[in-house]
Length: 217
Image (cartoon, rainbow, N blue to C red; front, side, top):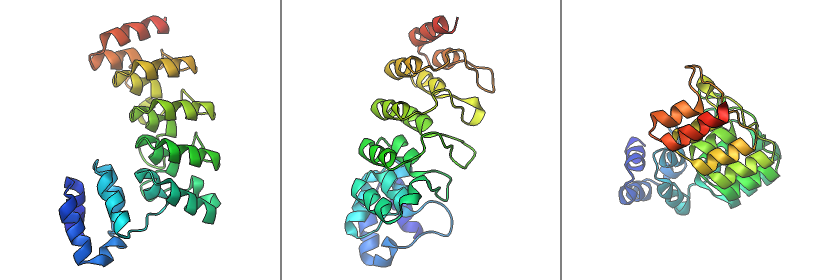
């Protein structure tokens, strides 16, 4: 198992496939601690390896299917267990948050249509809501869909960080405009007392910082 996880972390597709072909039981095994092989592939930026394991016969659960962007698997899980749409995974994340962070619009739309809560925070130290996740991932259309479904544009995560702080820090003017038009507070301060403009300036986005400063007056 540890060899497979290392191959997934480093993005070594050939070695990962060789491992599961030599030991097919690995396709259905899970480590005693930490994320599953499928989630490991996504969390380390190698989702294509996770999808390759699914093609080899791994069966993703709802969280893995949401993170990998597999709408057919998500649909099947929701058809069998409708209440699982707002379930929490072992690491505290929900299906919608995972789909939003990794930019899977079709899966996010499916989850929203099936009643996913747009405002529930993750059950871990990050306390992220789906909008935080979508903005952090830079996914404009998913963020717009969440707002259309009632996402709280000023919700705070760990450190009292709002979605606007994230968009400013990442230098995303279109996202900033979307959030401001939805009512984001340009004067909101983190636990450190920093505004979105402060975060934009720290990251080198001076033009964006000046615009946010003007909006906060």
